[in-house]
Image (cartoon, rainbow, N blue to C red; front, side):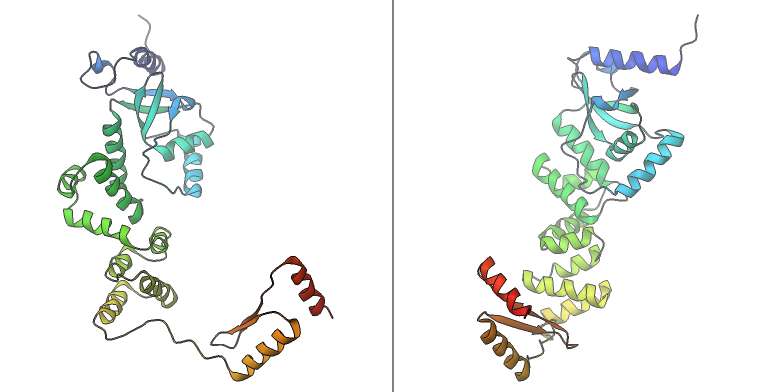
Length: 295
């Protein structure tokens, strides 16, 4: 008897799976022929997961992974579910993207049976367990599980193996101003900074604290202490008072406005540097300003 190669076994597995279009659930007849198969799937037959919790991908890291795949191949299979003659991606989008860059035609995949809700849950839970998700991505994944799977925080705690208090702390980050959320995602401030800022309800004051954290490189502990003092009324504002414009600058501002016949605004920072803004209402007025400056 001729020896069956691994490649031949994989080929027959793919054919068998695709021929069983009626199998959509683990409870369907013949499901055992699909569950647990690891097969080589053409990259063009894989549909991206619309429920992908990850929204940011490090292109440099993907390029590095692609270089590794060129040398060693895909070590860990991706996870998919059967969808007629195609496959929906459940997890492994980085590996899929890197494989395309590496020029592969197929990729090893672990085939699961899952309905839409199960697919969403598997994708969310697997991503939550990853170490390289940023805090906001994790928070959004938790929120998606609550909204789309109708899970309470207690049930979600059991599903993902994290304390309920941990889940609550992540979800509270979504109450922050979007600019501050972006700062956490981009690594300008940490989750600890964000948790401290949640205790400030005024979005404008939150933004002021955010700017100060970055400008003064405040630690989480320093931020917590500053927020505490603000809430206790020991400090009324963290924004430095603006240095008043001198009479001489105001005089210059008026002179320019009179000469140009336009509104002129001069702003100066604490170091004496500044800028002059000249308002104009049309391209014709802009040309007049240019002509005046070119005299």
